[in-house]
Image (cartoon, rainbow over all chains, first blue to last red; front, side, top):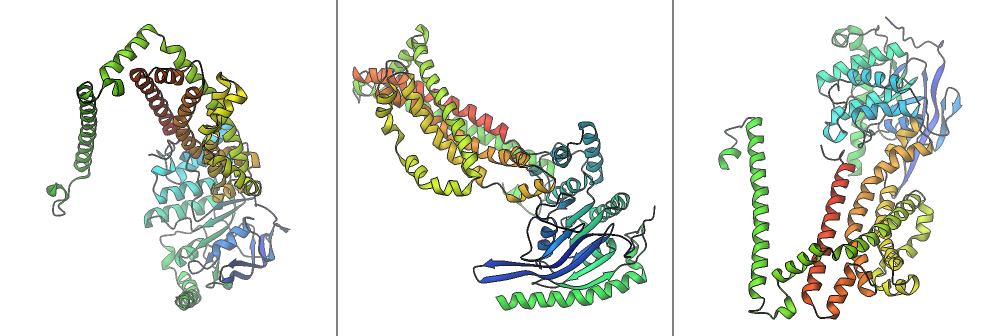
Length: 275
Length: 275
């Protein structure tokens, strides 16, 4: 079932950052992590935030999740300013937040339990998502017995199991090996197409950003701002293994790389300067 | 050894794990054997020296102590005293422990109140509680009451401090994750704060149990007409070294047994930590 992920103005804006800025006070004085970010994500869009490591992408995600308030500007969710935790989203954080005293199945069931989903449906959905992230046979294992990549997959299943309308994913596939990563990316795309979910996806992997997203938003080195916003009009459903050989893919990649390499160098200069 | 660790001859995973398992088993056996040897050497040299090197009036002897214990348990005269001591321990630990857990959780989540009360709590904690035992006798009489208060006071502080630390140091990442899932404050307590602090509560309990036994016995030593402490005090009053040491042996066995039970309970409660 092909889904048309156009970037047209016909779809309503789900989330928006308006001049969002984040300044921390450190011992050396104020540090700006995010400087005046303006971003709009429309219903059903898959937007990848791409930028050098440690540039403040996670800060932006935490703002959209309603966990931190911007020091200037505001975050809007469906037109309303966020004032507390955003419960319309599923959020998979970079550090895994699955509970160590709950088994894999208990962790995935937790959001359903909180939302008072009946037990029968809960069991069924947990089984479905356990299978999706390839953890069949590990349902009753505690996180301490799992590898880093497996814990990430539990986190992904936990963020998706209640099928929230918006997903925030912070480098969800960073710890996976190449084959599993490709499989999980394909699974994610299929599921998102089915649910029609809106996705804000943080990564520092350029190819991952282009293969998955409708839009790649390139961010600068600290303090982060948006450098470029590129439409990826590759048709869906995408064949992830063959996508990279298409001429249009190469074209987008060149443009992203031009921006990104400049920012990576800027980031390195910055950190050298500090040393 | 060198054959096994030699890099030129890689071992199959199966055989190497079998090897370490066997070595671990024999190590455990060696430790146990060593412990038996130390025990036998200690008891036989004590037995031999008693009457030859030291006057048994001062040191008694293992055989005399064993005889005394046999007499107590065969006639059953010791049970009344043992049960009294256990009752003081049990009621005191239950009261002090419950209060410690409740106050610990409350203050752990109220940082400002905790900061205000901090110096006062520290002062009371630093007091040698055993030195207050005579006062408790004055206030609560020579019966059960004064010992229960002493035991409760000792266990309260040990369990309170651990619970407090556990409730205070819950990883905010987990709390944020649950709030995004839509959890109420109560659910956050139930699913995150309590299980996360449970490890600390168990540690507090493990430390408190032997201290509580000491509290009950010392309370009886100071003034009582029943209990193992009374038996010891009575023996001392008549310069009966055998009775004193036999009483101490009973206390030691009770304390070690209770501690082992708590360790089993702790293992079970924190089973998610070991895989």
